[in-house]
Length: 618
Image (cartoon, rainbow, N blue to C red; front, top):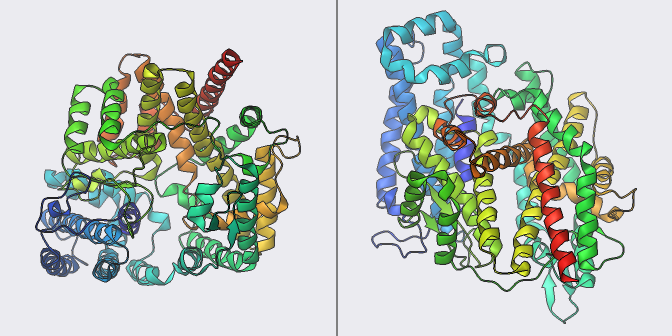
């Protein structure tokens, strides 16, 4: 019960706080003082949490004693989780500010150990509530109206009756939780720390160590020979470790299969989807629609080849931008552009967003040893969301700003509208707010673009985002579904076998057989590079979310009656309802083809606009 929420806290709070205790933070730094004035204050909360855990432990075996006892025990559980999330956020963000700081790492590790303790203590709740049964639980809630805030939370437990063990079994699973992450830990250690990355010399004489960061940078080089050189060096290194990564990933697949069996599910996918009561049709329809519309993806690759002047499109030609630009978007300007773009969401939304950008919620610029990437952490319910950025003053950074603030506003609205127990929203809805903001930003930027070159920059970025978020994530989803199914059925998988499965899917999506994009055999080891595969059936939700966000944004921009409020009500709902049903009631059925057909139509519309601009420039 705790696991999926605690994991979300630690995953979201994966970026870095600047240790600025005792001083007002500069505008580009987040203000961790809003969480704790010092580590001493965090330590005091840790002591308070231990006392609360003792109180909660006393509830074991006594939940059904009375309506008052039942409600106060649930209240204590909520207090425990709320305090722990705040503590975990601070520890993780402090570490992310400076990943080389020993004190930050120590606090993060203490937080993780404390999280396991919370898991262990709270593990009795689900089995005991299930033993009481729906009738008894309903009677207790009815007798104490204050307990009504737990209705959805309780229903989520009670519907899992067939998949929940007794208290001893649940405690055993909780105790083993620290020992079941070995596969992911080995992947991270090898990929991030121990991999002996190769060195290459680029066409201008620059020597580059081709690690993950350099690969991401130089795969977009304007020099095609440099792109091939970087691709060959990078994937050759992964190929060397194909066997090791195969063993590691197979262990993860076996763990997922075992957990599905232990919890009485027919397979791993069914268990993963049932965590948020998602119909299987959502997953299968997404993959089916993506593969049905591969001609649109192939059209994109052909357009890219034409603009890049490439006669034979190769896999290393996917990433360079179709249009070069030296436009700069410093953070102050980016904020103003973002605020202008969200005007269609209303005055209240815009005002709250402006206030958040001026209130120490984000850490903006890269620094040595600061965590890379970008994220939003909205888990500190009584404080405010935090955003980690690495803003580099380009258009991608502007788009990332809008994306992460979409998450932040989602958390802010949910935290203001829901009690703590219902405020945390699942991944299935998490990316809707961020992708909606990206569509609104593109619409605004196209309206104010000064010339065709600038329009091409925005259209190219939007098209690549749709490719990467819809088609690429659907491709990953197809791979996950196939390999999990094989292991669920008792088959073994080697690194070589995984490469064959992934390579076939990669070639199909990129039209290798049709001559659209040639995929070299070496590059089919790419599966070993994807960290998301160690979080089963996660990535498909990026594709469903961008599809839903696209539909919501189009309805809002077109002025459809009630569209804005329906969308904002999805954000305000947080986790108070099952996500598929929530989004469907707002007008988007993600188990139907319609949202995926709309995202494909959007891609085709963008390509039409690009082709018109290209034709004008001749």
